[in-house]
Amino acid sequence: MHRHPRVAALLILSAFALASAFQPADAQISLVSAVDLALKNNPRVRLAQADIDKSTAVLKESKDVYIPAVTVGSGLGWSYGYPLGQPSVVNATVQGVILSWSQRDYIRAARLGLQAAVLNYNDARASVEEDTVVTYLALDRDLAREQALNEQLSHADELVRIVTDRFNAGVDNAMDLTQAKLSAAQIRLARLNAQNDSAADQLKLAHLIGLPSTNLSTVPDSVPHLGTPEPNASPGNLPESPTVTAAFASAQSKQQIAWGDAKKLYRPQIYLASQYSLFAKFNNYQVFFPINPVTGKSVFQYNNAGIGIQITWPIFDRALKDKAAESAADAVHAYADAENARIKDQDGRAELARSTRTLAAKADVADLEQQLASQQLASIQTQLDVSAANPNAPQRTPKDQVHAEIDERDKFISMLNSRFDLQQAQVQLMRAQGSLDAWLRHAAGTAASPKP
Image (cartoon, rainbow, N blue to C red; front, side):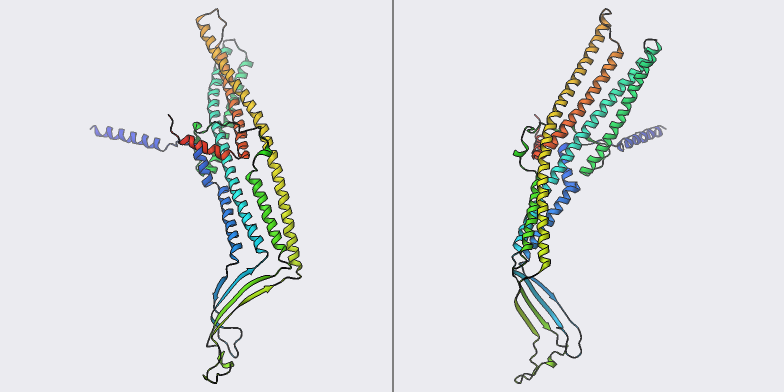
């Protein structure tokens, strides 16, 4: 008789357990793990790696022209009368470059192209690292801001309740009540915008690291201290960025190609040529050759081979001359692009250094304002306690406390935004100065070391 209630109770508990098991859990990820996943999964890194593989193959191809190429084939077929062509059972050819004045320049160009691809790969990694760190910091700010807005909205709703009671008691007027409701509505709108920002940054971070964006959250303790990396350093004294170095390597590669194209004219080129053919016996070749008086057989040879060199010496070729002029113009264009990249990079570094100092000052102001608001809130709370104990002391009301709580949360949100702006500029400056990767390695070492 008592089994059915027990079975029902067990079924209900199982249902609750299953329901809780299928509830989406927060997917927390540390900063270092996010960067590692982004470097493994981001398409920009894979594209840069593919460019390295292609440049490596181009370099091997430019060198392998000196290795003779061996080709084997067959030209079987039936013929009537004197055989046309060389119907062969099997034939083999060997061809290769012996001397080419241009090929050495092409090899240098391919080597410089590979160097540029490696530099672009390093720049792509740095770009992905920067995007991942900035997005991670933005999401960390978003989540903290959402929590602060939830607390601020709770205080605003409490303010509306207090002002409503005071309005009903005739202490506050309708304008005070409308102002309280307006403040709550503005905070509710700000929270909705913050939730949208969180969802957008979650999706962006998920795309960077290759994970689902559902309930993706940060680990605030995994972000080490961001110190300003030498903002007063002169941009001219810093090593050039991989972008600029890759641009000049690419320009040098195009210059080598231009020199190689120019050397194709008025200079000889020597090639190795060798061929072997086994002619077919059923094409009546032997019928058209004389009979050897000693052996009584045709002097026709089934095995045939030849080896030699082929020399070409272009004396007049307008197409080659025009091609050389085209390559020279490409080289000039590439050098101009590289110079523009250098100027833009130096200007960007200087602007980042200046903006970082300004944002650091703004962050200090916002932090002090938040501290002042917190101190004012504590002062009001103390005055409320004193007023409750001593009616003759200056009176403070719960309305004053709620106003102070709302203002403190507002200053806290401003501090979060100012701090993120500073962190974003610091990350960009570290990448421009080439210290972002070292900072991330330090972060990884800090995360790996055990806490005392």
